[in-house]
Length: 202
Image (tube, rainbow, N blue to C red; front, side, top):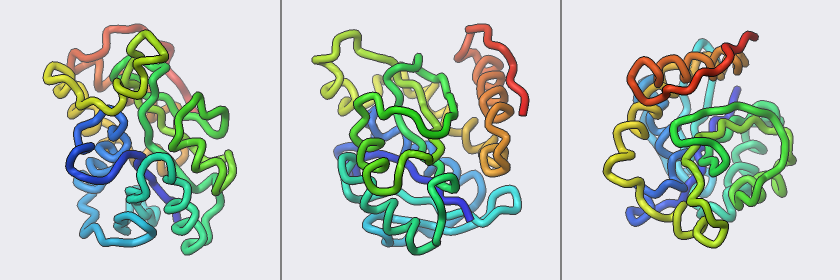
């Protein structure tokens, strides 16, 4: 069993915020793999299914970003999963828009959702970092992440979420480098990523 968690804030006013791209990615995974219906559970909404032959639970905490760890801890206890079986999808200021990186553990870089998670379940969970870019000034960060994606950003956001969903099986199988590479190549093929990057291997 793996627990796939999208980070974001619940409620209609936050739906299209940059801070909610983790929610968007996990919702895309559920659609792509025909996993439904979402039910109220673990202080949020959750759904169980199968990806790449592995049982998974997808969770969107309803506790607001700063308290995400409470919902994740409840789900982790219920399913008896260790931190290494938790994959967290979240917005990342330090990556260019449309970039995706996967890592296990590490610092929280001021991300309140990650800080809450680490406080409740430890630090050894896997992070799927989804780049949203940086506004350029630390003072602007809070306003920036709680703003909706601009109209001209929506095409890459929607495409990236679909590409993540298409390749979620690689994450479930633990083939993180292949996942990163596939996402990069798919975004490049769709005209959203012109940067050259080394191809990863498992």
